[in-house]
Length: 269
Image 1 (cartoon, rainbow, N blue to C red):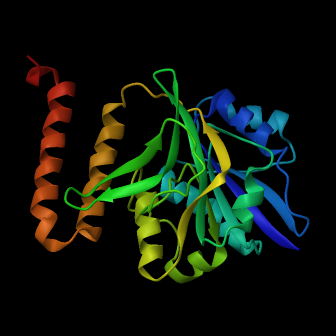
Image 2 (cartoon, one colour; image 1 turned 90 degrees about the vertical axis):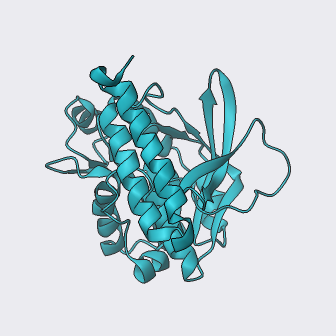
């Protein structure tokens, strides 16, 4: 019997993580697979942990003493999954809702890292995310976003979103875990690129769809934007060719200036 571990990183998830766990409990699996669900809490200060403990007593919770960030927080769960002999690990955001059959096609995929189509709303309209691409001149990431799903294969992608990604054990054995230098953002792109460099296959499975509620889709807090730019710098240093780095650094400086211009009162007009 094969085992898949679902790792859900929680940080002040509130009712969103409860809805996620409710949907996860209804997941259907192939007859030769079994599933375990693990919540890793990153020192939440709301009532989400108490909510999980009261409503989902059968689900294991690991409580980190501090907010370790996305990569390190997920690594806590991944380490336990591998210790428990998991053949695959599914990383799932706290603000997602899954369909009961979504995991069947992911587990059947021949890709080493595979993600579903991510469905979300922007300005009241549904958007479908078919995976991520890298702008190698600027060291920036973007997504293949479409207004509807057609009967076509996904375009060539560079990475899949950490929002929901199924990773085979062999990937961790070869390249290690998520890089904890990335506190927030770019850790998924970095992980996928490291895997691709040694021949692992990255894919999006069009038969699988996950709803992403995108909690807090308004303006990012200043601190989150700083993490974004810091992670972007690390990504540029690690992955962009030497001759394009000046372009990438220049664009990053512009973004940093714009961030301070819009957030520091003395710099505003």
